[in-house]
Amino acid sequence: MYKFLHNNRIHFAPGFHEARWQTEFALPEGINPIDHFIVRIWHWDATDKDYSIEVFDAPGHQVFKEYDDALICFNALATDYPETAAEEIKLELIQFHRGKISTLQSKILFPSSLVREP
Image (cartoon, rainbow, N blue to C red; front, top):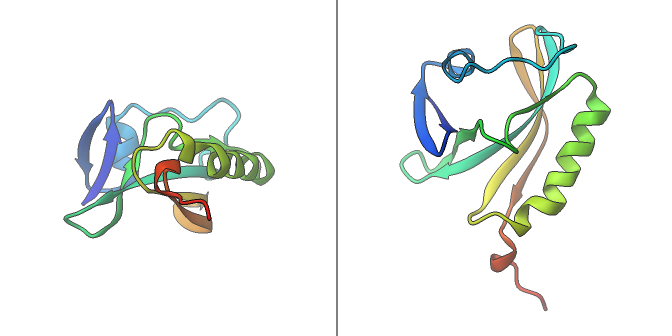
């Protein structure tokens, strides 16, 4: 079962495509529905003991036509997002190509309050 966070509530769907359909997610204009890049944010699920709740609300699930644009977003979130995060999260840059999801980069980010300076 696929879990996702939308409108501050956890929802369930059989899979990624169904979650997009449930949220009435529309690809931005000019995006190829068969081949694009996505920057994803995942929350920890204590039951699954994994980062298994995808954030569909901003700034999660951002879609890009070009890899370079997605990488810029990924790096910006990796730098800035821990400042506002309340818990640790997983940040992913993936390629969606012909229904297959390939992880290109992944990072675990800790909130600034958890980071100790020497």
